[in-house]
Image (cartoon, rainbow, N blue to C red; front, side, top):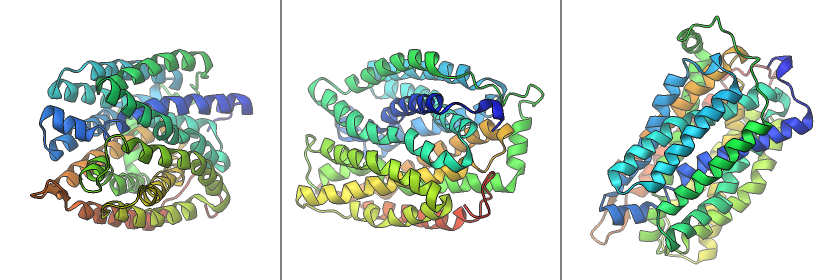
Length: 405
């Protein structure tokens, strides 16, 4: 980070809150698809695998756009680029809300992925540009509370709107929030142009990033982090309704309880990341996520309170490992190449999510009673990926880190 990028504490906090708001809408736009799975499969007459393709289309489009964005992201000011991409994302989300059928929705989801995938990388890049290494875990914790808020308020409210109006309503609501946040971001965000180097060739940054073995290992680390959860997560609501017996009205409680818990745990894990070290904290969370993730794929009918305990623990661990994980990843690149690196990383992240959702869809099936079968195998694949990340975390070199971080 250049000295000119540093901000006063209050301005830094406003920046982090703005980024959290942008991340909130981006994450909610992606997350709201998954609990609406039973509605989409029934309404459009599609299979679970076809629904998985609808989820994958967004992430694969985000991966492709991230690859393209890596050729130009470090050649423009962060603010200008963020506002343009976020405005286009709002338009694409509006198109999702206006979609009359499956194929139009598929096209709109691809468009949303093209712009939304870059937003995530850009927000993480801005955090790394502005916040010093020793406070980056806390900063990531603030920005990533957007995940908690989206699950606490966004997903339950979206499901309420879908139940009482139609599935179009949540996307229209997200588009409206985006419009407000575009204005807010334009007013509060600094320009952030200290990284710009007009001499860097369009493809030169990519070559420099890919030439570094540490970067390539970081990309593998990111891909496996995403694979851990996304063989399981897209089909969770379908499983809870078909196998566990939850009604559509009970699903929001799963997200509400999980979101409230992560709203507090994200800040705590962010502080522990800076206190204990990023690698140590990540390893603990990557191991801790395996038991609740596996349990979520083996559940039968049970008391609601017990289900909420297991699902909330799943939410805490799944989101919690991402805080030290992304703090590790953002610290593996040189400041001059950080935007290119993080955009390529976002491309890898999105592609891994899409592939994982597709793999999960191929592993599961329906039995004669209409129950989801083979779901536990998706958890086994995710657990194996998580174990590999535990090993990889200690092999990454972190720029700006003390002797052991």
